[in-house]
Structures are given as C-alpha cells and as structure tokens.
Length: 258
Image (cartoon, rainbow, N blue to C red; front, side, top):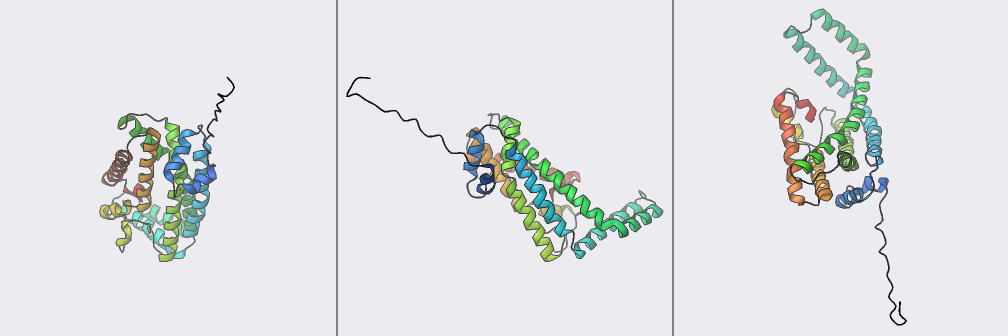
C-alpha cells in the first residue's frame, strides 16, 4: 500500500445472538427478531426442548392445581358417569361392569384424574412443537415454495411455546376462580353450561384466542424463514389452523380442539 493512500477496512461486528432464555421472553414482544435469530443461528435442539420441558413442568403444576379443586373433580366425575350411562343405554357396557367402574372411581378417581391430566400435559408439551412445526414446514413447501427443513420449523414452533404455556396458566387460573371445567380464553366463555357433546359448544371452545395468537406467530415465523410476505404467510397458517379445527369437530374428534 502506497504512503498517503492508506485505507482501513473494518469488518462489521457479527450480530449478537440472544440466549434461549431471552428468546423465551422476547417472543411476547419481538417475535420477528426471535425467529430471525433462530433462522440465522446453527440448528439447536434446545430451541424446542427447553420450552417443552418448561411447558411440561409449569403446565403440569397448573393442571394439578386445577385437579385439587373439589368442584372440578365433581364435574369430572359427573361427566364420566354420564359417559357410562350412555354406554349402558347403547348396550356397550353391562350394568354390572358399570357398577364396578363407578365403585373404582369413587375410591381412586381423584388420583387417576390427576395422573392422566399430568400425563396429558406432558404429551401435549412434547407433541405441540412438532405439530405446529409440521404446519410451517408443509406450507413452506406447498404454498410458499421455499422449503424449510422440518426440524428448523420445529425449532421455530418450540421457540413460540411460551405463548401456549401462558394459555395453560390463564385457563387454569380461570378454572380455579370460576370453579368450572372448560374455562379457557375462548368464545366458550359466552356459554353458561358447556356440553362437549354439542358441536356448537366445541366450535366456541375452538376459537381460543391464545391458539389464534400462536397461529399468527407461526405465520410470522414462516415469513421470517422464507422471506415471503407476512400477510401471505399469516393467511396460509390461519386457514390451515382453522381447517384442522373444523375437521376435528365435524369428524367427531372435537375434544382435541379444547
């Protein structure tokens, strides 16, 4: 380099990457930045595993709190008794067997309910990022035409899991406060007595605002990873999400949308 013609080249500093813990909280206020960090970083299974573990732990504690409420346990027993009577009426269960089931429920019902509720929360925690990740992966491949590796989509969904955990906490606190099953931040609040055999009631429960928020976030994640239009990606996720919920209700699997 000739004297008097000195130039200095400064390499730009790399963009700081937030920790997984910071993403856990930042997903509420800056989801685009969080998904951009996940996109630009190396694949890391902790992006989905840590939220899953947190969801299972905190969600499990919340659901156990619900099942310590006597009025909630009584409502569960009534639902089960109704189901048994319906099976007897259809000839699917002999009266003698039904009586033994009822006796067992009286003795061990409360414990069994708590165990199954806790197991259900753990299974939900594990499956949720893979289900939402599948939505993102599928839409990136079929609609956006910019394929995302499936496990990267799972990472994005896992990063957004704190939103659904908030929904579990809100629903649990509402259930304890009102003493009623199926108290969730949904249109189901407009119905006085929820009947899960009623498809209209299930449809109201399906319009859960926390899950709607999650669908919006997955649209943002899809747009961030593919660099496609946010509006287009968000619309695609919302349509797919609504379609699956409608299909569950119509097919008789409506309890999956609660």
